[in-house]
Image (tube, rainbow, N blue to C red; front, side):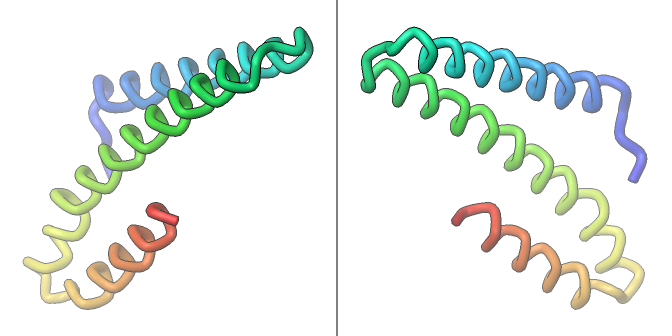
Length: 90
């Protein structure tokens, strides 16, 4: 799939943000920070990852799946999409 430079940049920035957040959480653990503070930060990481995942699912659906349906190969792509969504929401 061809992703635009902006889309790739946004995804990479999101991943760098998550990476920084996870490092921050590790430091909080080392510093014996309050449990609720750790949980708040973990929730923020989870929310950011979910947002990026949904963006990728939307892009995949509008791009790859849509093209496959138009080419008469939709069943396989729809099955794959349903499978990955079920894995993503666990």
